[in-house]
Length: 87
Image 1 (cartoon, rainbow, N blue to C red):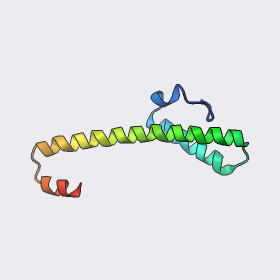
Image 2 (image 1 turned 180 degrees about the vertical axis):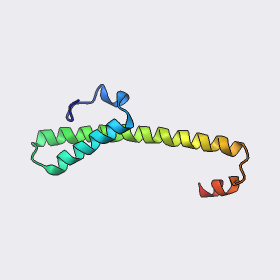
Image 3 (image 1 turned 30 degrees about the horizontal axis):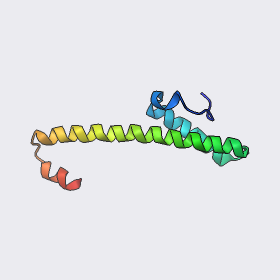
Image 4 (image 1 turned 180 degrees about the horizontal axis):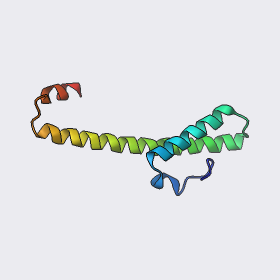
């Protein structure tokens, strides 16, 4: 997969780790310099797409954790009050 591709098949199919690793590569390439303006813009756009993919994965993970914690809270754990105050 090209780091400067448009990402059409990308975002829905990429896992979190794949998107994160590609994003790291994009950032390294931008920081290293030596690319044309056009390539730099394409890398920047790709980085934005990858960041959105990562954000969606992390938001989904947070929702799953919240749901799991909510179901545990519903079971009446001993530290329910402490957990609720921490949020």
